[in-house]
Image 1 (cartoon, rainbow, N blue to C red):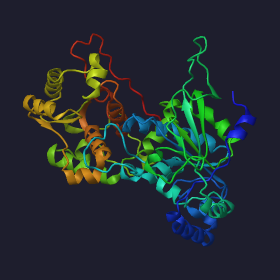
Image 2 (spheres, helix red, strand yellow; image 1 turned 135 degrees about the vertical axis):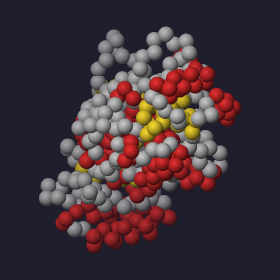
Image 3 (cartoon, helix red, strand yellow; image 1 turned 120 degrees about the vertical axis):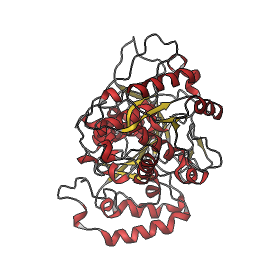
Image 4 (cartoon, rainbow, N blue to C red; image 1 turned 90 degrees about the horizontal axis):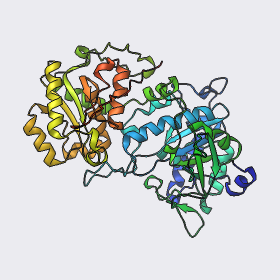
Length: 467
């Protein structure tokens, strides 16, 4: 287990480094902060409340705030990263039982599946894809851009310290790189534990001439790590809470490879609270709704899917949603063709199943979300002329990004009368959850395609929503 003395030797208190170009912005915030502290920012007990800006400059000055940053293994996709957010939110909730912690939202970008050419897709804030105010109604969060601008200093003393150390270029948070144990489970026994260990894989960080660590840091060159330590971790997210609370004094800590940690309460109330708070950005939902109305004869009123902007008040009864008069399909191709050969159908097999479902549910339209290459798309159109797809122009794509288009696809599939997805796809899993939130009958939601020669085609598990 962790040796406390060793930790104190290797992990020093660290501040966020700000480039000189950020100086005036930080100075402005600092001056505003001195005059903006108001007693009504916090409740009498100092607790975070939905609707408050838990990370506003005035609130930050009034409290001793610490920040948790995180990142995920680069090859992981958009929808797995959304799942990791739930784990980190749960960890922050645990930390907040003992102090004032805020979760810093890692900017989106440079994902494997985002392959649209000539589109700038780095440093994308969460507000492009999700309602940040909805996230904040569940746990205090802050966009990374706001964080590095110095708008969320922990205390007045910390603000002053930032200015004093600005020109000596103090680095950002201590970086903890999570990894599995090299030896695996001991004697085949699984137990929760965390230890400082030698790095199993080559570090994605390099030390510069000043002794700071350079890394990807979401494309922000001005961000540097003061130190990097590898931790072998086996357990649920909150297993790190004692370490972060008792052994590390840095104001900001970054967990890299955060997907290593498991959910604290998978499919429980805490999980669903965080999942429900991940409300899609309103402009993406509007585009999806307009597409439904124009091409699929689908509206919330007719489909019994009227939405409440306040996720805390949206508690639909399972089976209450009807859905639009179309079949929703997620047909994963590309890497799944060779990675999941047995449970991914051929195009011919998929079309056969689609036609069977359309006939069974008396549906004349089918919406297809797929990553199929152009050649396969042409084949699909030939075999399934009724197919409808959301196909943005280049100008739309430049605005929405690949992530926005993916969310619009998911939103449209979410509102279908019946949905069928792809085995083991997190894209399909997220649609399952959205439909669960809206109150669809599980029989119309938890379905997947079977491989052409698959013998035991087990359907997805129904994870019932908990309020």
